[in-house]
Length: 209
Image 1: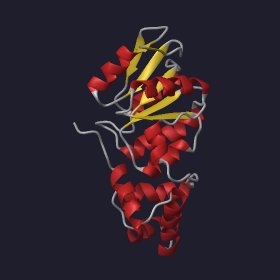
Image 2 (image 1 turned 45 degrees about the vertical axis):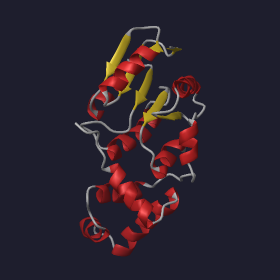
Image 3 (image 1 turned 45 degrees about the horizontal axis):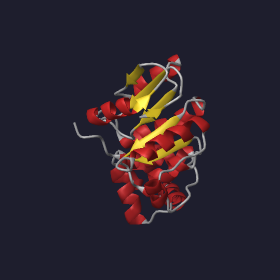
Image 4 (image 1 turned 60 degrees about the vertical axis):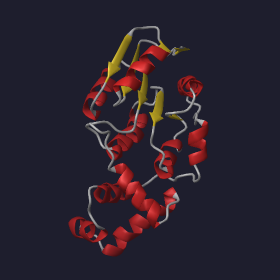
């Protein structure tokens, strides 16, 4: 077992019951308090209350799409920078991992790796030292630049199924402008057209019910 010396509570955003129970047994804290959260709204509420001292989370849930969780994580780390955050995930898309890895305050470990990788990630999260497990490092083939607000909006609409043409009509921007945003996203994440389509499909993922 690992001594997770974070203080009063652990917060889990994890869709698998077996994984949650395994992590709870694996981690020893100063308190028996654990919070198991199923929605981003509930997660935000608990964070605002200031109860958890660490957050261990997957990037999707039965009720939440990967895109929404990714945006929440990247925003929350700026709102609550003091909370140690461990991403414990099956997600392997290099563009998604690169966006997370751009923030050294986020520790990232792949599920399926030896348990010592999770313990290393937990220790690093408390120090905000940017831990990436061996499998995650192998997937990080490109250093991502942050997306602009406009690029995030275009990406969100494409994840929802909109084409560049329909996005141009809805936003009253030119097709050329929307296409430029798409190309900028691809360039920043190091993706070709096929990789971008895989990104869109990945961001539509929800954990199977």
